[in-house]
Length: 163
Image 1 (tube, rainbow, N blue to C red):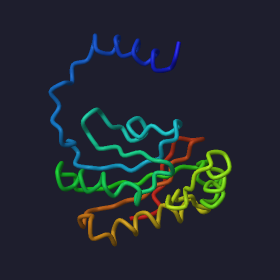
Image 2 (image 1 turned 30 degrees about the horizontal axis):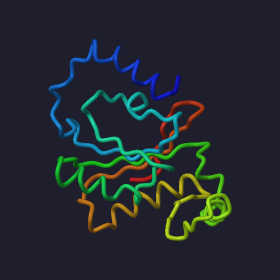
Image 3 (image 1 turned 30 degrees about the vertical axis):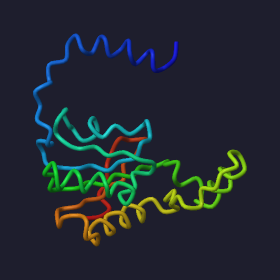
């Protein structure tokens, strides 16, 4: 059985008890969270969120600059008025340089990925500071509270590193 087939079976069980179909489209807490796609990170659980509370935008490294499109939609069309950026310890983005991945793509796929910014980083806290600063300086993002955290995958604790 494929993982997709397992998801289909699990969803059949889920729909039997689902009762939140009337939640409004805009997030009730008016916050957008940018977090890493790492499977060890679960912003809803770690931040005490319920379905409908927040927009959770995920990508490799939780890079805010890669989420500008989503944040504009979140703010302009769905009314979010705060942004939280979360990167985490033991992140895969700390393990390579952009040029290395571009070379790997060229070698293994025979394709040129030179036009892609993979946004790797070598300093975890600095990457959060840079993302928060980039959002604050962007003319595409509203002047709202923006806070950056590092989530520790070993302890579950978030630590504020930028605001």
